[in-house]
Length: 476
Ligand SMILES: Cc1cc2nc3c(=O)[nH]c(=O)nc-3n(C[C@H](O)[C@H](O)[C@H](O)COP(=O)(O)OP(=O)(O)OC[C@H]3O[C@@H](n4cnc5c(N)ncnc54)[C@H](O)[C@@H]3O)c2cc1C
Image (cartoon, rainbow, N blue to C red; front, side, top):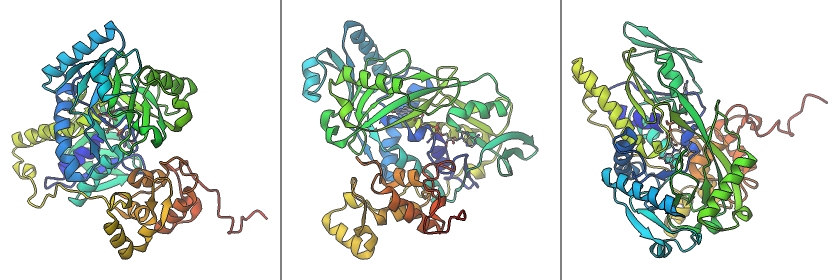
């Protein structure tokens, strides 16, 4: 997300900008596996970068989401206390909120129940933050990258940065595919940003991967909560949240486990802890409605704050490191701040020509039409213009073949099944792809002009079929 936001911001200027990622699609790191909350800005310690960029990011998302056609819902959030110690912790959060100049209100149980009728009997009071909500994080990354591409940027996927070398013209980047000379490099490598800092000669900073696991639950119980519900804050983070996804599923998580190495496996213990945590806020038999599980890795920095700025001893390199939560909320502000730092340097060096915004820069991006959001008249028109919009592929979510084909053709387009899912949502319903997967594989193979057996779920090592049994197997 951070790299995508920096890409969008840099594509405003008359530069040749390349977004490089080791994965086969954009938004495949932490930005696809998180709680997807636009945080209200009351939680980070006042005076930190996390605090100011959270608040600024919230403000920017309210305009960027409209410019970029990204789904956002300002539903507000509640932080709930079940005993006197937690009530005191919430009092502290209210003070932090005041210092950060974000609206927060303390509510007693009766007022909370008016907002959230299903709260546990133990909940005594809580903080209400009206300016917070939900975002579609998949769309956000895709739209940021799509906007950058439409403004002349370039994208290289499946290419890992392996080394950096100073050269007279700037930096020589050694990737897994080639050697790239560049004048500037913006490091937004998420949980691996410390590794890139080390490549730039900075050993003082490190990142610990902190895993968070989640359950996604059926849409039929999405109505159980109206706001994002947090418990009072914990030592390792914000605690287990009960929320909805932007498309109406209930979602609970994440737990918090510090790891020695990145590992995205979900575990029985972790998922049990998530269920137990959620039940403290909403006493409900969540087990009966589980649809999917996933985990994400927070990039926890050794300084306890985001690190933004130019590299100490490597001219041209800029870092955005240790971007854990609220990184999604803060991403636009992080990008703005880092690009401003770069502009200042360019200004001082007398390179005014590269920091003047392009006259034809277009801030907008539009996703292809979504059948389920169209009026009946628009559906009719869409299907008449393109009959593939009349053929439903994903029965659970009502997604048409036309939407799937557009998800593959758009820029940046999907290259595998998860890429299609993140762009237009087939396989996210109750059957989790049980019915639509074969059809999606077929459409992707057709669009790419590739054999069925080459189609993957997420990256190279996830082939979905072994071979087409209509072809000779070669082992008769
Ligand atoms: C469990 C969890 C819950 C969270 N909840 C929230 C929330 O509710 N709200 C919120 O605001 N924030 C939340 N966050 C934080 C948020 O998800 C991230 O801060 C945000 O997505 C920014 O991520 P990023 O761009 O820094 O990293 P990523 O999305 O991980 O992107 C980094 C990219 O760098 C690439 N990369 C790494 N190394 C290399 C290399 N050597 N060469 C090439 N490419 C490389 C990776 O492939 C990856 O695509 C949460 C995070 C987690 C893990």
